[in-house]
Amino acid sequence: FVLFHAMGKAVQDFWPLVSLGLLGYDMSRSQSIMRVATTASPVAGTEVRDTMMRITRETRRDHAACILQRIWRSAAFLRRVRRLVRSNSGTCAGALTAATVERES
Image 1 (cartoon, rainbow, N blue to C red):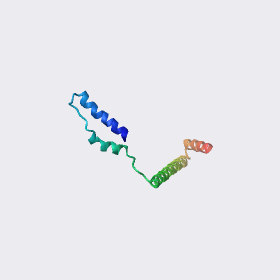
Image 2: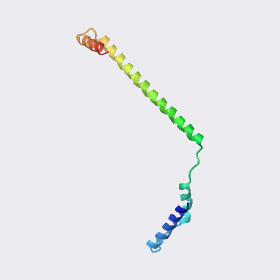
Image 3: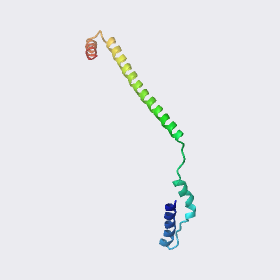
Image 4: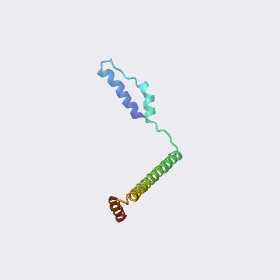
């Protein structure tokens, strides 16, 4: 606190000197602002722990949701491919596609 008071006093004395008295700085009006800016807000350790645990749960849930979405999209894509292969199996192009899909899987 003493450091900020000394800094505020130096600024208060500087402006009237430089501006020949036209500009001024009232340190008493800014002391409460500096005090608020430098005061640590007390936070309980349990609150920090609970917040960290909540963030961890949310992160794990979001990751699991992404994995399930990926699996669902892959399965849906495979179902569409199989349906296309079955519907085109009577044509030459369909037979070629079916053979290609069977070879890859």
